Amino acid sequence: MHADIRRFASLVSWVVSPVVVAPAAYLVIVMLGYDDEPRAMSWFYVLFASATVAPMMLIYGLKRIGKVSDYNITFREQRFLPLLVLVGVNVIGYEFMKQMGAPRFLSGILLFNAVNTVFILLITLQWKISIHLFSLASSIALVFLQFGVPTLWLLLFIPLLMWSRIYLKAHNFMQTLVGGLIGFFLMFAQLKWWLSL
Image (tube, rainbow, N blue to C red):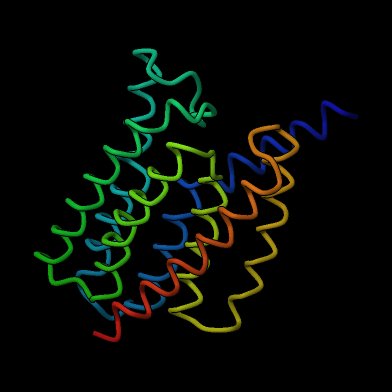
């Protein structure tokens, strides 16, 4: 029974992970919000490369050379280098989006991904915030900004992911709660401000 619960918690942790959740949110936003734009899929590919391809390749490479102990980068001390590289990846992605004439909303996603990664990096120097919860909550904030109140049911995934990360002893309650709260409200406030300029 305990093994089954652990397997389920691990499944939740992998399925509702940053490299899955973020691109899923981007795909929904691009396909439903910009379906009449001929360059929509090109914009999605840049988002996907920045949110999924680059992080996966980076973490795989760091794991191969022994710079991180596991693919979830469990140890806080091992997170600095990958987070720093991902800041650069998102800045490059933002510049690509600008050159491709992407809507301000889409380019803003990558800009604030870079800003928020710096924020997480600074927190990581002293404390282990949940990047899983931060990513999930910020992705929900993006979908909410694009499609409104009906999408708030997605918030139900937050307590499920919190339980998973706590059960797997990857984080404690406060690390998951703070990650979720900051992820949602920070991304929401940033994009609202960005779109009002």
